[in-house]
Length: 305
Image (cartoon, rainbow, N blue to C red; front, side):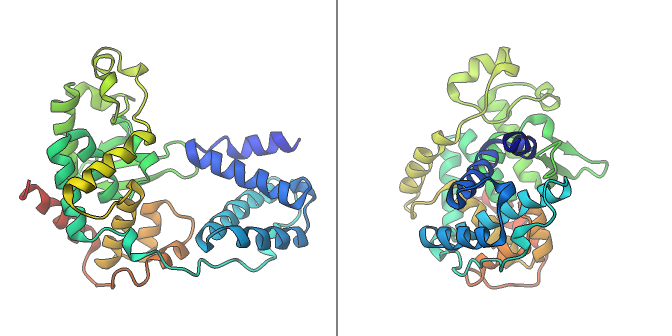
């Protein structure tokens, strides 16, 4: 029965998120040495105490929120009478994000321009991550049909379509132009692809199939990204960053330019504004419009390419 419940809960999750939740839930049962449906408040305390000894504060908080969400599901579906994780004190992510993990505006500019000179594809997905705050997994699984243009000409992207985490992100004009340049010059496919469920970012080895049988081509995998970043950072003569750090850069930029915590939380797909506290001390808050200011920064890159 437990396996059926867990399967139903994770059925709406995808990729790494699904694996992370499943592992956390299974680890919880292993640590308390009983099925989650038989757990008591004391078991939750034992579990939290255990993971605090072997994980960073941010990881502890992440696991807590995953189990809180799962036990909310159990409660909502009448599998339990009380959410045990609401009965214990929530662990705090006491350590702020390290400054060196957030690219400076100068480093971000150098990295994006270096990627653009080397590969339109790599520049396009890095531009997408750094200007929207998408996770790398989300970015690499984007399909052309996920983009849309509303009646006012504003461009957007639908993420986690058809799931409880479904949300929209704003696409700036220069990013859209970059994606179209990548489509025309690197992929060499026509505008008809924009209406289809074809992946945007693919391996170079799949180009021939993509132009003839795009529906069978899988997205570019995350393992291909790290060596690209290592080489780009070396060429740009900047510290070694990761794709996750580009996501950090977007949060820092929007926070720097005065976006509200609620709007940042929604854009990043977080469950709580508490995640933003990790960025305290990285950049100071200003009061200008976040969207317009960050758009100005990214648009200025085209003038330097």
